[in-house]
Image 1 (cartoon, rainbow, N blue to C red):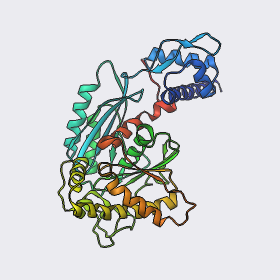
Image 2 (image 1 turned 60 degrees about the vertical axis):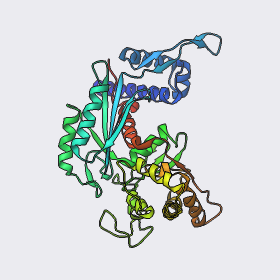
Image 3 (image 1 turned 90 degrees about the vertical axis):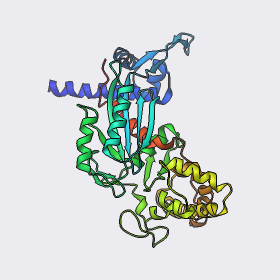
Image 4 (image 1 turned 180 degrees about the horizontal axis):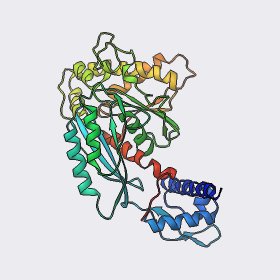
Length: 388
């Protein structure tokens, strides 16, 4: 009985610690009184937790400020730079890496052309050697991929656009960060998570993120958490039967949405070639669209097909905001305006509020940033304890 009671007390302590860490990330520098008010914990409990976190190097006291009754309160803040996570993305034509610290600061971010395990290994090793050392602690790492990832956060069930051998990638992951398990997550889910915590959907209760790469996927976020569905596969919208019914998709079927609005479909519509990353490709298309009516007309068609699919998703999910990432962001209103018009035409009732369509603000590293942020999950829930 005593052992069970001790275990319960330990779980409660860790849960309370997670609550304080989440509050500090959300509120920024806060006094112990403010933390107690936000978390519902006793001030004495908060004081003990803060002292433990100070000893671990996770928080630091800032200059005092006047308290409610004139007594100076001493705010504490999350200490950046010591506890880090690594987010990686392996996509069809590029790899990305982001290092994030406990305070939510991006320590490093980079991407480069590539689509193989060796490209990912080189980028990961370079990133780790440059930014993770003796004075830092890597608390987690996550790889984002464009495919169906099972609920175990390890098994890729299906990735039709990514031509790699998944058993080989699994072996590779074990060598990237020796002694640490690297979790795997869907790229759209990771990017959606990043937008809700760092980007265009911050403060939005219900948002939908749409990738804009060779494949098209969606991430659904409710109150800051990704909705994954029963098997973990929610958001595989690229294979909805929307758009050109004759267009051949990478999955082998015809008529999938991504066959009409994916990167390759967009390039076919404007008769231009692909560059080394989706963003650079879209930037070149946007420049040409300024003077070429045919390019603008092609983007108008793509935008209409974007709007058709979003109308279907809006009827089902009713998002407040839809964030369009990848190649959509540099094209902006060239695609978003026809999408908005089509969405207005297709919503069945004027009582139904059209979601706000916004371009991503996070660039090509959005999924890697979300992967890094998700790696802090066990810390903010109290499952993983920070130690000196």
